[in-house]
Image (cartoon, rainbow, N blue to C red; front, side):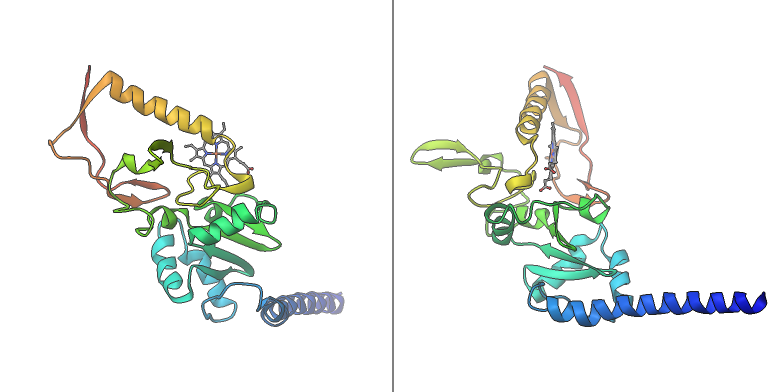
Length: 240
Ligand code: HEM
């Protein structure tokens, strides 16, 4: 009986070890060789250990501080392995337009929702998840003058003396993409825009707003699960 038990345990251990070795071999030798020309650059890392460390290092609250230096070094598109899964990060609006609008059909599939993928709009091609760093695009000073300032008039386009609404769908070029872009753009974006405008217009129409200390509104933000006001707005509200 004892002998059979030992034999069974030895067989299970051998199978587990060979499975693990095969996974590592595939990931580091076969996949890397065939994917070298396909996947964007990736930071050098200690095999296996670093892959799992990224899982803890990149979270919604520190995604920008972790990725910014990597983008500065490797460019606007890079690959990070989360465990054995390649995750591609795109921080450039031209690349986003190329992927989501010009090649929309190729990038139209989606993975199941998970914490990191909720950070930004994401797609999946084969086994690689692709994340678009939408906040980076919306803060680009090359596109937006003084991007953090409250200037609602920047969303109005003037063409041949005619004022046109800003194209939030990014169909011609992406300047910001709060609703995604291309084939899988949020189908509720028009309803959402209407609702938001209606909501804000009513708040202003029905009530007078005065900052408590008489100062202006502080638009600086901090990141938690989502971006929130660093110094929350305190106001005196009175009916008009
Ligand atoms: C301010 C409000 C809203 C924002 C910022 C927003 C943003 C988004 C974003 C970023 C996506 C993902 C796009 C992508 O994967 O590339 C999305 C998807 C989606 N949104 Fe919205 N959304 C809003 C309101 C709404 C409303 C009001 C509806 C429905 C009435 C809606 C329905 C959907 C659906 C069904 C999808 C999935 C589309 C797909 O995967 O093909 N959204 N939204």
